[in-house]
Structure formats: structure tokens, C-alpha cells
Length: 363
Image 1 (spheres, rainbow, N blue to C red):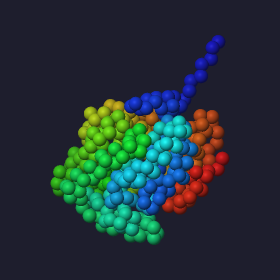
Image 2: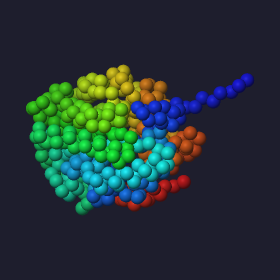
Image 3: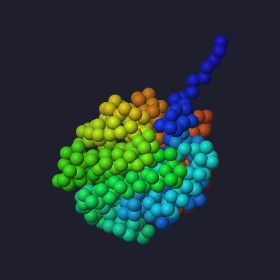
Image 4: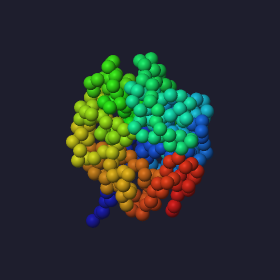
């Protein structure tokens, strides 16, 4: 009798646009605050990402497309020649290690502070973040953002498009537009942060307009097969209350279903959730799912492997994992062989800088 080995779907090769991926495990974008004060990635970041090159795809952390979009200290950016050169060192290191990378483009909107960017944050409406924010001087009360004019909106769309061109120049295979986690695009989509009465406010079709314009501009700039979009339906992080989640996301997907994007990335995905099934049915292309692992609860012992397999069975094509990759640069090999995982050392994840809990991890 001839025995055949059936590999778990997570470890099967697949394609993403022009990219051949060796497995379906994606390293999710993870804010780590290890760039320079000027937003330029350095050697430590190059080492960190190269260590994790065995992921099918790495999506590098949220990176600002302009100065005013900066969220916290030591966040990377992609709007100057120095930023491009810094990221080029990172992508070169990852490519040398056999990896593939996208870059997430993230504008913080009201999730920002003049102590971080030197500028007053912009947002759809003058509604402040309902919590303090981390600055170089410690946590400080949030400020009331300035409501964006239509010209501000147009300029920001153009900044995203240029940031995408910069990312390609820096060696990235593509970019992910961040429309999740209470950042600027999500703020436009949510009722509690968007009180506008113009074409960008009111009904769901208007509130998704900015996200659609940004995504299409980025796709026009570098090609749609180089562009992904990340969403986090019903996520209340950073004080977001969407108000009409079940209508909002089908409206967004309908507006972009013909754009030919590389993928749609759903954060905190649950295969038992009716909205997940609705979006899977509506989205015509590759669906990337980030499983709901109960954050901030401790990471499951399997790092999310079982949850990822359930999402693949429910129609996802790729699975993104975050915390598992933080503590386990060789996460793919550990999951493939069933080796135990290192625990995440939470106190080193953000704001502290340095190699501990970043490039220096337990074995």
C-alpha cells in the first residue's frame, strides 16, 4: 500500500497576484515602535523582519504616508527619500532571506498628538480620542483634531498614492491600506467619529467614500494586484462605534469588488459570524483572515493554528497571525512540526525600544 501525506492547508503553497507564496501563513502588521525618531527604519528592524522571512508573506507594520498621520513615537514612515532608503535596507534583508513583503499604509487621524508629529491631528470631525495617548513625554490627554476640509481629503488621498509608489521603490511587492482599528479611514466609516454633512458623511455609502477613494488611488498608482485592504468590522479599539456594521461593510465591499485588489484582510475574523460569511460571499478575490484569538487574552498554545484552519475551511485563502510571530521568528516551522511556542513578553511589545522581545527572543 502506498501512503500519501496530506499537508495541512496552512502549509500549502499558493499564489497572491504575481507572488508565489510557500505557505498560507501571513505575518500580520504589528506596531513595534523601533524606527528612529524621524520614522526611518534602521538595522534592528531589518534583522527583525529577516528573522521572520519564512512567513508566506510579511505585512510590515503600519507606516505613515505623511507627517500629520503619525500616531506614536518611533513609528516608521514612507514619505521621504530617507524613509525609502531605510525600508530598502529592510526589504533587501528579507529578500536575501527568501521572504516576500507588503507594507501597511496607516494614517492615524485623531490617533495622534502634536508632541508626536509636530502637527495638529486631522480627522473627519473634531471628535477627540476618548483616552490618553503615548508621547515622548509619557501619556498625555488627547487633543481635539481639526476637521478635514475637502482639500485636506484630496491631499491625503494623493499622499497615500505617493506613499504606495515610495513603497514599491523601497522594494515592497505591494501595500496594504489600513481601514481598521480606529485609524483615519475607519474614523470616516464610523458614525461616532464622522459627523459630517457633506459627501463624506451621513449614510454608509458616503462614509465609505474616503476609504474607497484612497484604495482606488493607491491601486491606480501601483496596480491593483499590489494592493490589499484591511478592515476590522465591529472593532471598538480607539473609541470607535460604527453604528451600522452590518450595512457598512457590504457597502464598502460592493464599492471595491470590481477593483481587482490583491486581497481583502479581515481582522479578528470568526468563521461562525454571519458577517464573515456575507463578506466572503461578496468578495470576488483572495480573502485573508486574522483569527479572533481573544486578544488581550493569552495567546493559545498553538499560536492560532486551529483557528486558522477553521477559517480556511470557511472560505479564507490566507491566514494572518500576529502575536505568534512576535515571540517566534520561526513560527512557521514550529507550527509545522508541533514544537512548543515561546510566550509573548508583553512589556516589550511597544514603546520600550531595543532588541529584547524584538530580535532577541527565547529559544
